[in-house]
Image (tube, rainbow, N blue to C red; front, side, top):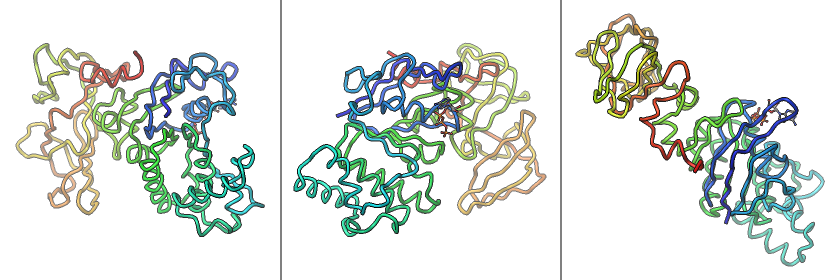
Length: 367
Ligand code: ATP
């Protein structure tokens, strides 16, 4: 069992702050993603959980026990690195058994445990092979085997699939997720790939510039982004942003874009000033009866759908529509929007209108 609480954890390297007062909770058995662009502080956060780096302030609780100043060797947490470092002079069996041998486990027990792990990973036939000639995927399985065999409380994975080519990466991602589902061990996984985070994670922390921008399920961060950064980073194409100055009067459920009345969710009432109207590409409907119009700049055919780029008075947007809907470059089209999918952001702060967000999403782990 491993529930990990990160409470106001900060890490400074001299004058530079790599992680600023992060707060979130990783529940027992979760596959938990730390997502963000290069340099945002993901690896530093992971290393602090594993004990490879000590926080400057804040606390880390593992099953209720404060561990933030404990050395890695006393945390019972396994770390799987991107460059799956294996001992090249040892065969697969010896690589996997190494952590048990160094703990002093009896030979008979080591053999049984290594066989059990090799069966889980489907690499029994590789046990006596040298690691040198193995494929990337098999090397990754051996590295995982070495982590699993210790039966740790939790696994920390730092871009473990980063070195694999795209096709292999997808297969290993599926394998990792199904392995996790079978074993149920708490896993914290660092990635800069939003698709990987969305596909694999039970929960996602989105980081930017050393700050946790949002913490929630993949659906929460996709449907209810807390900031422009999250809305832009998650999804491909990302959320569309239409800039305007206006207000959603108390009790009203509409905004005015270029004089056209557009329905928005009731929770947005109260937003006003320089606002950004956020809408996902698949929530735009091209509909000739709408008075809000734009010019088609391009259409990109993707098989079942197409991405249509449209210039409006409030900015260029991308709409994902059915491939069989006919659109022509240069034509003027009407745009309407699925009302409940709209997010309004405050232009100066970049934050979503808070009343639309489920308070659980914002407060998760902060109580
Ligand atoms: P990447 O995917 O590129 O590794 P990341 O989000 O994992 O990015 P971190 O490795 O956590 O980012 O680094 C965050 C910032 O802290 C970076 O600017 C990095 O240069 C800095 N940093 C990390 N470790 C140290 C260190 N030991 N000394 C000084 N600065 C560091």
